[in-house]
Image (cartoon, rainbow, N blue to C red; front, side):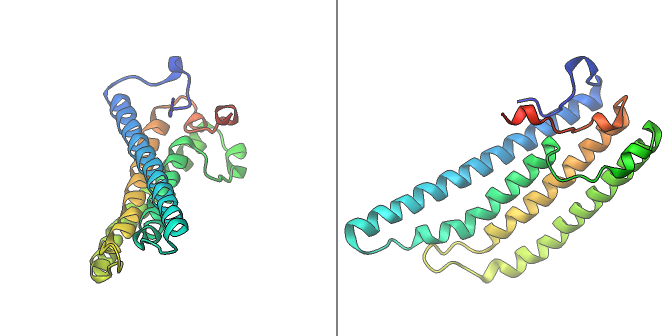
Length: 187
């Protein structure tokens, strides 16, 4: 899967481009594993609960806590993957009025704002993790920290994606070609 969305011939070369590609590929890999893993564990645990309940008329209890713990990981993994692929909603009205230089300034400013915002939210999220350390799910005993940790992962992933996008925008011949969503890749 190509996460750059630029033709190989047009892809910038050099040490910065290599680092950016490595970081992006790592972010996509981790996000994919977390999203698919969360979905699989939720499915298997809830299916086991259904089977046990059907056979014994009693539930196991712990599978009902799994969505509370794992659904945030599924969502944040998907959010980060969407950012990596340029699949979030974008308002492009200004882009048509600006030239390449204006679009580069706009996109650089945008990525700096995004990175600062999401790294700040990750920092604030550490306080939430500390607060939720005393909240434990009754059957599994897992603390609510694990669910809230997904938010911090997502915020850091989005902040890093903004930084790699910033580097790509600075290196690209056409700043609007960076992380452009190609609908044909979804088929």
